[in-house]
Length: 221
Image 1 (cartoon, rainbow, N blue to C red):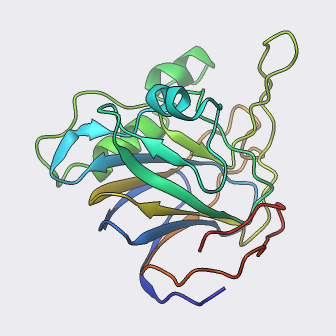
Image 2 (cartoon, rainbow, N blue to C red):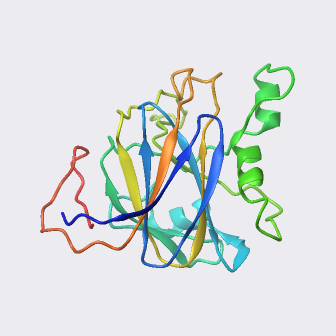
């Protein structure tokens, strides 16, 4: 695989969120720095934040719960916004669970303020106006929510190791927000949220056919 220069690295501290600008054709890689950490990824069209990634539109387009390498994510206007090009993790992600918010923590018995992915999104988008009025369904990278034969959901700890990553190619100029999920009541982060990193990279040369990673998935990078 050809090495692509990192134009920008943004560390997302545990329990916080960060926004980066990504141009069409560039790649954005989210790295689990310590392992076992879920990230909520939100994507918005840069010139109109009312257009954003939509989990329901994506599922309708690809006939899967989550895209595999080579498949795309779509907006609420049915336009492709990202393509999944590489995944060095175990390849388990989620697009069913809503972003955690203050109401979620209150329902879990938390008294008082608790950091949340919804609030992290709002803070990260504060420099952009007008801000979107709703919190879209996130792309929950590294989050394991299996569906069993009875259609029941399970909440499992993220299975990533330090340095595991997932990489997307931007199909339009966009704003990408990543929240290092603050969930410490459910077990998805092992009870101790840690940091993520967002790398913005230039486009890469095509990889040789058959290049694979630990997940057994091919890379398109």
